[in-house]
Length: 330
Ligand SMILES: NC(=O)C1=CN([C@@H]2O[C@H](COP(=O)(O)OP(=O)(O)OC[C@H]3O[C@@H](n4cnc5c(N)ncnc54)[C@H](O)[C@@H]3O)[C@@H](O)[C@H]2O)C=CC1
Ligand SMILES: O=C(CO)COP(=O)(O)O
Image (tube, rainbow, N blue to C red):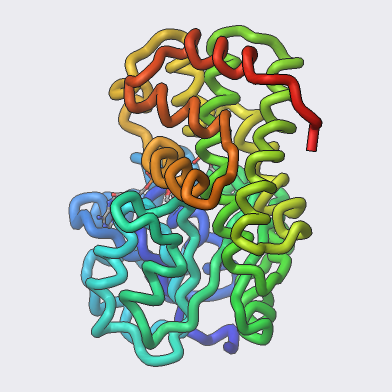
């Protein structure tokens, strides 16, 4: 993987644009593919993603395209579309990606109908690709501003993970490698659901102590789930697990937290996201079902799912969590 290797990014939203800018540090011809020709035309004209990252310029080396064929010949493809759209997008690129292409999943979520992790979706749709995952505490706007950020890049093939870290790291955007693909995915998917609960507590003005308790007990849920899937504890304690949980549960900049805060203030589940992508709202039901299948208790995630589906209200959920039997902390 040389610095001349072609890099393409699928998905021209906030995170796709930020990652294209990172990839274009010292590199030209980074393809930023988006499915909406009007959005791509505006990106090319304005050299700024006004819809998702207003005020932040597109790097000179980024070439926006709406044409699938622009991605042909890329050795590294970053997939940055919403989790529920990943299968459809991967399928569109099945005949375009060459054997051995590194396909780096940057979305965070679980496919609802199939309950597949993103790496499973990619493996099913793109059998020719070598799959990796990039996840960790990283707001697109921070990364676009060049603020220091550290995330995890995992691939089962450690040599691939190492090469991708070298290819994609910049001075401000540091990648740490891992081979624990599933551990990284579980952290990214679960933290979004748990961040909705933290947002709800903030929206209901439950106080900073409740906020800290939710992070710690949310992490206990994430750890139990990860253990049931046999992933490494170090991964869950790292950037893609605890790191991202702390970021997302503690910042109104997070769309998942903001959705929870709106619910906490009394907004209706169907309106509270205000048109923004909050992946936790799509992942919650699958996450809860997968935990139940494995006998894993996730009461905070269950409460979020029940509120989103309209089965219970926020006050009822808080009451139920507070009335749970006292137990050992672990
Ligand atoms: N925004 C952020 O700070 C971060 C986002 N992520 C993850 O990246 C993923 C993408 O998020 P964002 O870029 O922030 O979302 P976004 O809402 O800013 O952009 C999503 C983009 O995907 C496009 N899209 C929607 N449906 C599509 C389809 N069927 N085919 C192709 N494109 C489609 C939209 O038009 C939009 O351009 C999510 O899974 C998110 O959790 C991860 C880390 C940071
Ligand atoms: O994943 C993220 C930060 O790491 C972005 O969080 P939101 O999707 O909640 O905005």
